[in-house]
Amino acid sequence: MSSFELSEDHEQFRSVVRDFAEAEIAPHAEEWDRDHVFPVDTVRAMGDLGLFGIPFPEAYGGGGGDLTTLCVAIEEIARVDQSLAITLEAGVGLGANPIFRYGTEDQKQRWLPDLCAGRTLGGFGLTEPDAGSDAGRTRTTARLDDTTGEWVINGEKAFITNSGSEMTALVTVTARTGADEISAVIVPSGTPGFEVQPAYRKMGWHASDTHGLAFADCRVPAENLLGERGRGFRQFLEILDEGRVAIAALATGVVQACLEHATAYAQQRQAFGRPIGANQGVAFPIADLAVMADTARLLTYRAAWRRDQGRPFAREAAIAKLQSSEAAVTATRIATQVFGGYGFIDETPVARFYRDAKILEIGEGTSEIQRMIIARSLGLG
Image: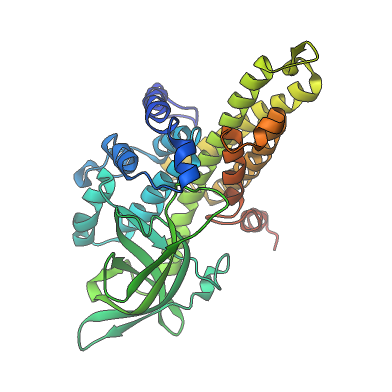
């Protein structure tokens, strides 16, 4: 790409993912949402399609692609179901990417092939009950027991995606390894002392796997340290920059879905002898949806392009995440209003979109955190 416009290859890939999403996800999304089901077989089918390995080298079973290609996939999955989109986004960006970016060759060889193939999932244990946006207040500790060569982990994590499914193979957690240092440690699923707490009952994302985690004298080998000791917090912040671009892509898919559903409904729903879309009170908000979709897409793929070109992109990632996530929340409200009473019924997709969208303004950095990053880039704060 010589600019952040999508290439023909990207658009062809979009068609492949859209066909998959329409055939394998859309017909079941309402049922999964209603029953709070994590659809293991469909997630594995996403792996078979190569979605979890998109940005990783072929040497580890990946597709050798870029962040832009991953964003295309996430956008198209989100267009029909946010739960499966966040499963993909977190599985790649928060599960596999830390190991690829900071792992030893042994760690990469052990974990990445299955993560890239979508045979397993990894979690990203940063948030704690008392440390959300202020993640530097991490209280979880990891003490190195020199007599056994093991890290002894104690503490809790909260709101961790892909952390308790039958596909989950590991969770990478941040922990205090000294008075003034935070490190990252890989904890395999099933390790004694590692408890996955019951799944949350959430307002949305009902088909996404989300748990709290507890560690009580949980022991893992010293070689499970990920990256440099004392740099775990910094490493995770770098990972989040890419994650914010991916969340922006997810939000873009939501806005696009709202535009498509609202337009179709406004064309076929009759009131006072004509389609409701003939009324400016309906047509103008839908026109706003078109503007939101284009704006979100442009900002998202600009940020992804800068990342793929090796250019600084933290500010652009924050702008894309802020605009796209807030646009998604607004878009779901508009679409629900267009649908009227039917928009309040769970079986209507826009009702599910409405419930799902709010977390986009919170997860992987709240809107307030994005504004703080942008303000600092302007020399403020």
